[in-house]
Image 1 (cartoon, rainbow, N blue to C red):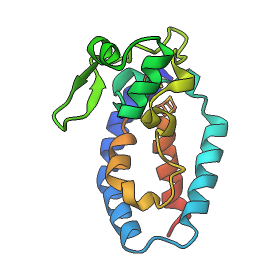
Image 2: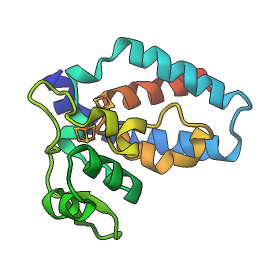
Image 3: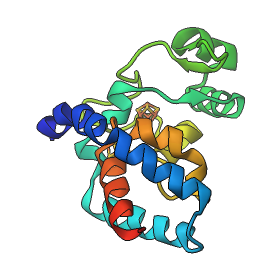
Length: 163
Ligand code: SF4
Ligand code: SF4
């Protein structure tokens, strides 16, 4: 797995222009069955990929925390929302709450998330490959393929299946 992470940014960079063109075309004319296809590709990939062998998203990038996330997680940790913010979060350039540090503080040594039941929505949905109207998040996906081996494989499969 370590080898895969090491090579992923370069592989994603090599595919970047091809992926950009593919998504530009997809945005213009998304196939009618795109939602169904994405669900299928997502399910197939995550049958093969165990996130507990990976956790590269938790190690290298962090989610943004909505107010709802903050309230829910603070309650779980028996903290006041402001205490949670002071202890774990900072405000980024886009004015969003993000982690003070990566790897994520809540990532266990066994790659398990210590706040799994109440984790941020962005974590629960990452890498968003089963999202409806997937063509609308192509810019985000272009970045995610350099972080997430599953997203990388799904995009490669998309290119084979959508002509
Ligand atoms: S979502 Fe992607 S990057 Fe995150 S743990 Fe799963 S396979 Fe790895
Ligand atoms: S909150 Fe949990 S799922 Fe989200 S980045 Fe941290 S360890 Fe990963």
